[in-house]
Image 1 (cartoon, helix red, strand yellow):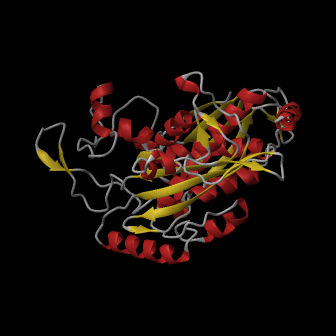
Image 2 (cartoon, rainbow, N blue to C red):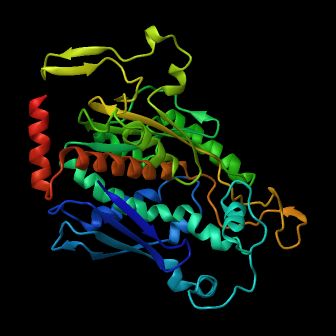
Image 3 (spheres, helix red, strand yellow):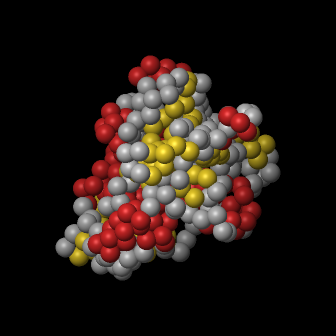
Length: 386
């Protein structure tokens, strides 16, 4: 089991992440974690913050001489903007005091109003700073560690954008782990060059209007062993765990495992993946991926497929969304904050993180082991027994 806790606010001094449950002996390379954080900043249509924001890593605990110790791993992700900005030193100071200009025009589609009412705040910044997708940088650090662990079991996780605004790929070809550099080289992390051009045009048009765009990323996990998750309890079903993890990403409003929504319109005779004998391995394989690699709450072995839908961002570059000033109760428009036109390419990277965390946690539950070596041996013995 893996337990991940994050702390920190968007414009504060930084973020912290604690990962509990990693076995001893896992190699930790700071440059690899930094590389994952850099991938989170990818994508045409991102805001100016991505150009000057630097994620300053500090490996604080649970690691010695480049390897995990089996104790909780703690990593700090410093906010480089904090050092340069007197504004954020004042706005986000932990010292007693109050801001001179509280935000009282909550944005529709954001956590602002619900959080203000729930916690009794009179300043939306008390909510939005933590609700910000900046928090996902801390998750990506944890995801980098989970991906490293999964690599020892032959599992790879990647994503690509399949829809952005009104543009959608028509290709059925899916990238493999070897194609990841090509995906990341795309301006919108799209594997289909024709669709990529249409997506870029959509972003340009929305940017000219001061508007935002949503979209869909497909997440692919290759090499997943059969039997992760369980059918015996509702809260151990792998598809349920993945859906919850993916839905926790800010602005995500839909998750589909395999071709779930399309399959819902089919008859049962053509809605399931045929079971075939695999003569090469002596095991079994499927003739399609309609179920997304999960049946009865368990992985069926091989490829897991999920689609993650992100709504258009609730913060626009022109304030037009109707709201009410919570101080005066007068009708107004929501405030303008620095924002992206779209963050769908980055959302895909965060979706990889959440998928990797779920799969790594379930692999540890299934195979156990206090060290990486023990985990790998247990996994190998299980696979050999199938």
